[in-house]
Image (cartoon, rainbow, N blue to C red; front, side, top):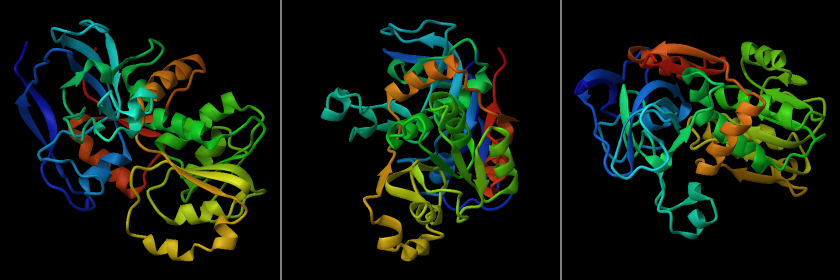
Length: 348
């Protein structure tokens, strides 16, 4: 086995400029798995907006340099001495949750996403923008055979966090669901919701004409610009945008007693003045609710992978080479989105 691997390294934080190559492709030593760890040969890694949050300092890594990436699929290359679940050659995926304490009240109830010692893949530990990575066995999940590595990669975060958002929305069959923003996570939520709630109408709010058309192509009942008034008020809305403006706009579209679920790890500061438009009678009165989504639990990933294989839910995606990760991130920053973006790294 070789001793070096290619990896895209992040060395500094700050706003990502247009056409900037912030990540550097270098050779680094292949890590070694210890005890209950797995060495994974990375085949694909999804590109997520959270990576922009890391790069631009909204959810900064505790140390630099770091290898980002947390929607990872690959094959177990080697196991540590105390692994029990996986063996060499198994197909596995790794999501945002890298580790938790396993002892606190949150972990004991299956809410390990809320653990005060939660650690994230690609932020607190090296992630999947590389040819190999090491993860605790508890952070790895079996990839159903129905999915290729690239098809499965967006499911590990965009899909799993969308699944958690849909659960937290409290939606019932026949009730209306809104999706604000229509990128990697929202397009998977639409596919899930159409299967789980076949009598529900899905409304999509997106700034781009292409995203609105894409939503209609996937079966949205209605699509319009953010801020546009829909045909009716909605029971639930899931906001997947990085901005504050859509939060305010979504609240006025809710029915009395409706719930807005914010599916974002951080919000950008550029339009924070949008919150000044918050009007209590218009946006919050009549027992409307706002609920955030924090991280993703192990159960979310496990349950969603099984559900996605059953339906099946497959992501629409664009592939990039590992060395083109900067291009993929630049397009994401510029809003050039249709489904998910995936780095194709290895060949099986």
